[in-house]
Length: 364
Ligand SMILES: NC(=O)c1ccc[n+]([C@@H]2O[C@H](COP(=O)([O-])OP(=O)(O)OC[C@H]3O[C@@H](n4cnc5c(N)ncnc54)[C@H](O)[C@@H]3O)[C@@H](O)[C@H]2O)c1
View 1 (cartoon, rainbow, N blue to C red):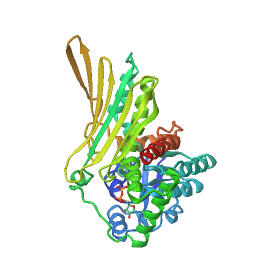
View 2 (cartoon, rainbow, N blue to C red):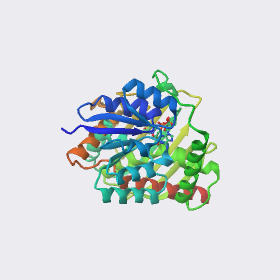
View 3 (cartoon, protein in one colour):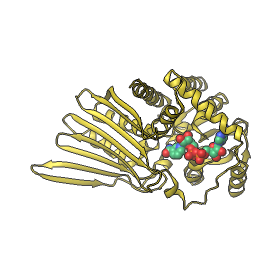
View 4 (tube, protein in one colour):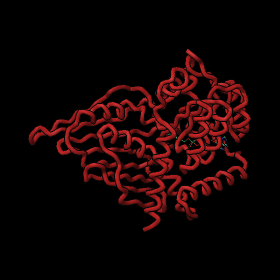
């Protein structure tokens, strides 16, 4: 088995809680050799802790003899770093959103195809055992899908990571923070085809692209399994000072509806993410825990009619951790040529849909 030399660009929350420990815990598959982060505090602490070469610049790190790179920087750097890495012949795993607009994703796809390297997007919920089991169950259901509802209350990560020994860098140069914000605004402008006010940029980049992107992606996988598709968008809004997002679309081919709502609840230490699929005589519900709680089960509840009675089954397929499974799949795609599960094309579909919904929200 080929052990891949990996560098990680961006060493904040998701790297420290998930990618770095998970890569280190897969020593037959990966050797983490380098990290890159503009914060000296973060670089020094992590490189001392794990014996890694540390770089200020992710592009300089790419020349350090890597086979592959994990990109976990702020969103607006994903596209440029992915293209630069592919052009250097590296395999890429990029966090979501892969980019804010489809033009940037098209650049990544072109670079991937030219380089012939693997490009995988960090939609880890597609590796969740409960999601995979629901896909299997959906293949067995007869009858039309009436509705898909998604509702998320997200307190943010603090309650779920406070027990970790995280290093937070308050020393990222101010100019870089400003550059990141300007890049975000410019990239959202390309997505929407117009100058968005800062609140809309926030609604598009936060509730939609950073959060609901997981649900939009997962729902499309579930619809595939159920033989349905997202149809015409019918509603969209940024809510609660654009710290929340809502969208709805017709289901194709039935007359059903998909609705999704995401709300930030920073003063309520509670995380709830539910996807419910409604058929005439069956209902399936996925309840995801905060993503940072490793090996916490996603609940899969199946409800079936039995005359006037109800049968409720709680499935527990496995304790496998989606954040670990996605890395194993990335390795298998690189080394064994296994199909990439989460492609840049999927990301392009997701971000194209968000642009359509955001334009609908703005038109109202
Ligand atoms: N899959 C998931 O569930 C999940 C969860 C959290 C975050 N994410 C994604 O991961 C990415 C990082 O999120 P986070 O919560 O870890 O953010 P964070 O702000 O905690 O960390 C980002 C890190 O990147 C560094 N950085 C900034 N600019 C950089 C650059 N140009 N090159 C290299 N490093 C740079 C910062 O100093 C910081 O350490 C985001 O795209 C986010 O959407 C995904």
